[in-house]
Length: 135
Image 1 (spheres, rainbow, N blue to C red):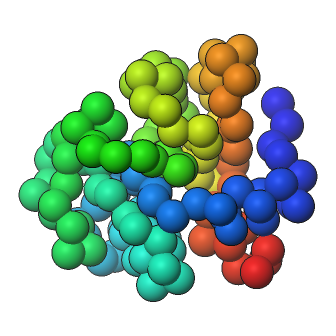
Image 2 (cartoon, one colour):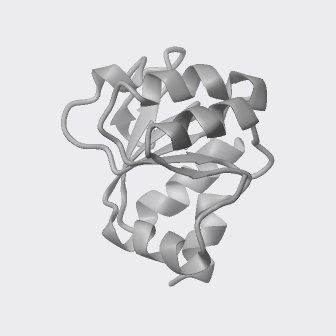
């Protein structure tokens, strides 16, 4: 399992505008909220994907990726590693080009499934940190 190069990640972040965040919490003390807020503050449109909340970061939440209207550039995932294959299956039903699993999240099955379909996969890397170091 190998992430794209730093240069490729920089290019992904530069061309991307809309980030769907699977598992985004509405609680400001949660990592998913803090990271997504930082990305929102950096100019990205954040779409909360969480069936257990109504909204996060001032944006109405959707229950699944399928409910999102319009293009998605990155799907950023805050779910346990063992849940990544299920999220990957749903991701493959979208046209989103980049599946990004946050720091500490790795799943070989999900990685292989996505790579076989030609999607860009990033795992075990914080999008906020990547954004900060590739500016």
